[in-house]
Length: 565
Image 1 (cartoon, rainbow, N blue to C red):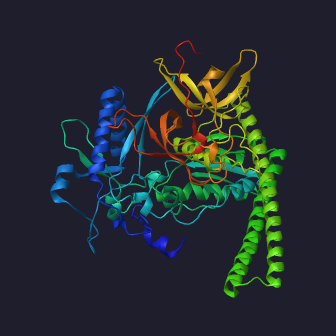
Image 2 (cartoon, helix red, strand yellow):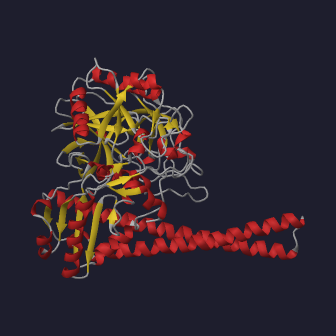
Image 3 (tube, rainbow, N blue to C red):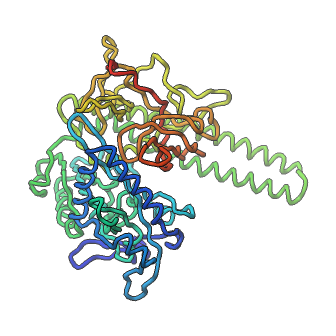
């Protein structure tokens, strides 16, 4: 940890970590957000009137949040408006700073067995001058190992274990000086003044992976999961004992321990154990070989890229020299020809390596999907925490292969906005949008995973990605395959939805698709769509612009009536 990070991270007397937010530019870079936040809070309360079950679920969530100490009341809105400013509580250098109020909204998610409300904090909401809190917060430098490196260490260790750092983000306190940078509006009943609450802990999505990971830095941690191992039982026991004893000292709790050796059980408290299991089936020789091949391919790609950049820099320098001399000598003609020939060769080699790596990724995913479905069918249900699930879905969208067309080649079906062929059958493990019925017969488009397709009945079996105990049997017209490749806006813009297109899009931090309008297209291969979700609680009938990855934006499919099954 660098000196800057260590200066921003302190320990309380009782052990819990206290973190100062790290800004990449002045915290004064955004204007007061109160009026916009009030407008959005009014829209939220209007939504309560339209959905009777929502206020109760929302109130229970927020009351628990307050009881756990994750937030505390600061002052009422009228009090803040009368004061006009808030001073930081730093005794040595009190400073008057603007308050940033994080808008939040709710998404009601209904399944066949339960109703849940998810509260989403939108820290990317822009203030009047176009700057959000996430814009001024530092995302920090890379702290974790690459995921493949963590997996390879796990594969090669005979004694292995995994554990979950329970609600890791919420275990880290935010320094009191920074509380005013993450406030929300709340009131428990309509008759009360709207209150301003300050969030006291690291908030999920608030540049939180960096903020949390620089607090809990372990060489085999990915997001909030520890996946590690050792060459011997004795070495693994030492590592487990250290983790079990050290994590609570910082206010963290390790739960859901999975161990592959009975000799590790005594090192973990009984109430924290989840299962004694063999990981051998997860990393068979075929899978290990592909993972190692992929690891080496990634390093070769990086080496090739460095060499390509060197050649491209030489080409640039040669052109600069020619411009200075205002002529192209015979020497530079030959030199440029040689450099361009090498650059074309390097690009072709890099392309071939990338295509081979993508093929390995496809093979690995196919193997893992098949085994996961087999395990699920055998009764071994996966339990994925919501934070980890959202991270997994984000990573799935980010790592979706990019279609790189050759000269004259058109993007294939399921690339970007291009739909599947009418006869296409989604493969086992593929993600799809599925139209399902909840307990009260309401129909919702949910994110699901294909378990199998029965050609005799022409129906799919799919599992709800968020409620994996819920399996649905659906006709093909109730299932929409998601894109298998991203379209490159710079080369294949025709494979993107047009601005103004009506689509179905996955609402951020949920697993449900809703009707939306494309407001802005991705500008590059790494960008996301910006969409406006249909929402009657807003005066315009649509939500503020929200980002959604290409993988989760699909053609609108209208419901065809109750007879559809």
